[in-house]
Length: 386
Image 1: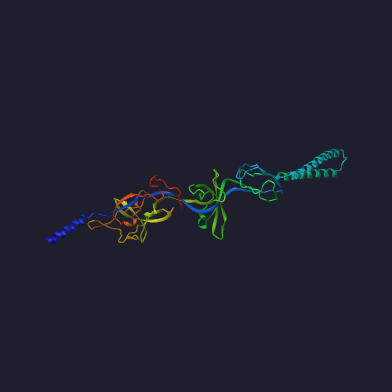
Image 2: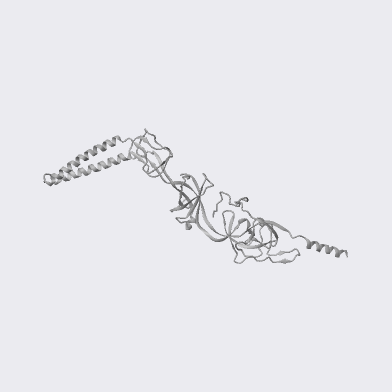
């Protein structure tokens, strides 16, 4: 009689034992088009940089700008002493006027046959020669005035007024910084995907919270035989003139996309001996869903796809005794429902390592680490990379 009572109490306690509940975070499988990008690092330079230097030596007698000033095309930057050259020009012009008078007389004499054909030809040759000399000397005089070649900004000047400037001496640099160029190198494995016109995004150390947009304008036809990489050049509009030549730039070049793919957090993936899997939340319980990991992206998410033939019996690492079946409180074995991976499926993210098929779940919303729990918006400075 006593043994029957003990057995009855034991059976009753087993039936009333509460089912364990595991608290986890969960989110839904998303379907998106993921932009495919390639990272690179390069240096910025203005689209035009000119070193202003005299083509004719002379003493600097005037400077007409302040360092860093915005200038327009045709503005005078420097003038060199040109008194000697102008005197030579005036002398040549006087000779030209005299020869022009002789040529007019010679034409009259030629009509009356008072001048020979040889004299007429010699006069014409002398006239043309003097015209060429005047034009040449005028060019020399003009070169003693240094003008801005385009709209831009002058750098810090290198030669002051009163200094004798030789041919080729650097006076000042002029920079057209309305558009910037960035040159960077990419591994040759990306060559089949690279195209002129692809968009880029750029971030600099000077302003890491700001992203600039541009496009690829050239791909070097030569491969660097030392690094086995190819040089790419892109243009970036610089409307507010915030970018400067020489800045270091971190580039993300768009090379394509993964259209309409399923996206899950990387933390939601459990790795088994045969494949990867997710835990779906169905009826408040954990149900394993075999998947194929296609690609990890932006350090936190992954592209996944359903397995064509879901395998069974895979055992998750760090989870002993896990299988495709589960036991209820009565000790009977039951197969978990079959779930197909699809957009909108609720899956476990944080807590994958402490659950097994069929366990009862208490779910809380999953918040990515780069999203503010207060505003729900992405934190600054985060960007997706392939």
